[in-house]
Length: 330
Image 1 (cartoon, rainbow, N blue to C red):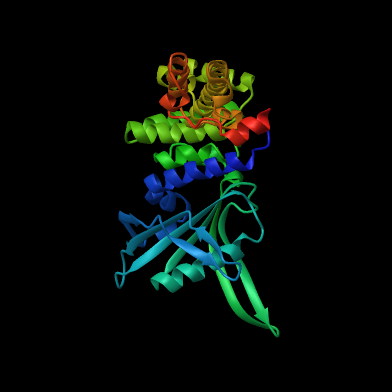
Image 2 (image 1 turned 135 degrees about the vertical axis):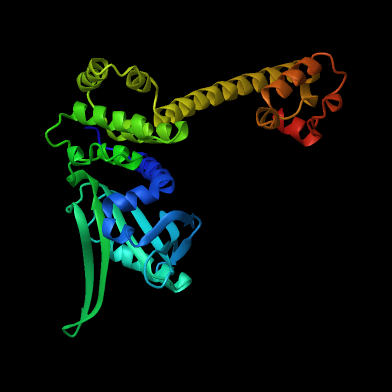
């Protein structure tokens, strides 16, 4: 499989931020069920502009997902759910989570539930990771973070979970006894069957298709499974480009159009220079000025037409060559 670029990894992280903003209660229920039982997930308030200064480096960092919820049992209180999304597992990431925890705790002064979501390469399935700090043989600091390593979970174990978030997560899990094509088929079917609305379905399917990158032969197998199961809705889904593919296509088309436009502008400036020099000789504006005119292609074309009949350079609103320039040019 082709190695992802840093830009692609960032865009994939963006997909999961969108998913968690839409399906955070389902995420917590699936992956930290004991803690989810104590949370009132009927109302979630996202704090999505939280930024902190990384001390001592001074770098500004923004958290991925930070949400305010209330507890169900005992003394009702506000807690914050903090989720960081990592494209791949990093051994020292709990230390980074500890830095975030300290900054968030200092600002909000409420309990925090920290969760690290590893999309690929996690060394753990579900559980906690910890970092310790010792001084003179004594434990000074112990920090624990809940971890969710999707790539080490088995997709068949989550089939039929009945939640949209599970459908997206399955695309990153170990296919287990399924082939990769079967895993993608089941993920897509689960997404279509459980999405609460069209917008959610688009988001889920885009995530699945982005992460389930199969060979052409495997993609044909997915289509065969959809036909065999009489799922024309899945065949329609498979025929559409993903959001990422649409963005890349639009970017390429935009870059090509911009390049063509700039080419027209360069050619039109050159034509304008030719007309000016033919009509006004030494009075024509200096070549650098004409070739660097900040104007649209339409404006430049209008200048060319006007220059063909203008009585002087002044009529065009362009500066005539100075005497010093004429002398230097000769």
